[in-house]
Length: 208
Image 1 (cartoon, rainbow, N blue to C red):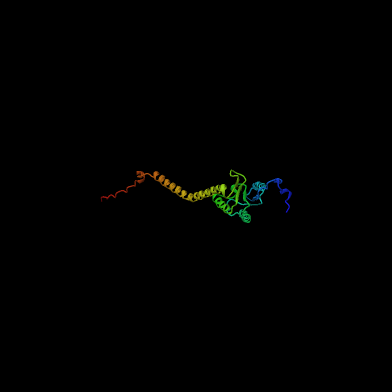
Image 2 (image 1 turned 60 degrees about the vertical axis):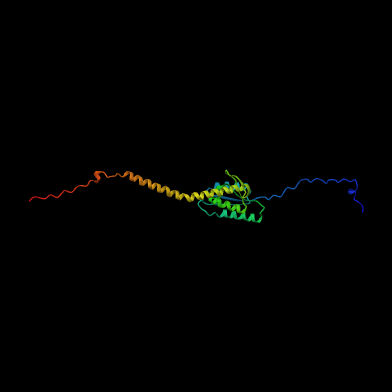
């Protein structure tokens, strides 16, 4: 059987042409779900929507609702959609994006509940403005942020629980002070002018 010319004796191995470039590893583009909450100001709504559009949110949910209202339907829809994306593509980062932290909840206790839900679903949280601007992952280094929210929520719950007890103690102390003041203004024994009673004249017998 004839030997190919390039494999015959004295023929050195020749390196093939170099690759033009090493293919980059595949990266999944994150899916951002935006949420906007306002009270009444239209300008406030426009500024938040503009910021979320710049962040390239896949979908934005917004509602105009008072902070006194506990149920927020649009936030529930945003969270439901985020969970759907994460279940359909577990390797794809899913981010709940808001303008600032106070748009998510009315107090730290609600933030604690929300952060627990985000952690359980593997959903990241992104804040576009404020001192805490950034993206926080539910695991790894970002988990510290959610832990802080949990601690803050527990502290607030304890404060709410202890506040009525403190009020009762203060009210009781004020009542004791008032009783003490009333006691100090009462003279004892009473002054003679007040305690003195007119003596009835003794009956005199008429001499007949």
